[in-house]
Image (tube, rainbow, N blue to C red):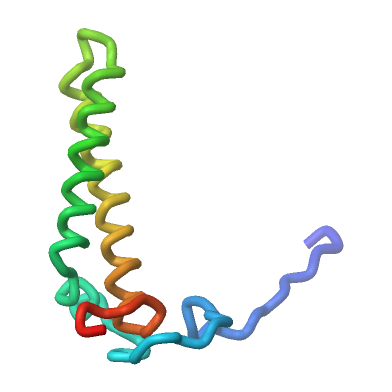
Length: 104
């Protein structure tokens, strides 16, 4: 209360708005999680693994001697999440026609 009013907003039906038009063949306009992960290719898995490995090495090499293992595990988790998100974005982009697919 106190002079503040509650603003009601309309429910959002879409996660985001993409202003660009796809430049490549659209395989799936709104891919599901399973479709996107199922579309991962060797390059996606390689980026995922390399980012995880690099982050693990950074975590191990920069941690104090008593915390080497914890630093490596923490950075492996962060690198793994970042690698997965990068692979997911690339895969979804191919399905939605924003990146070229392997057949193009």
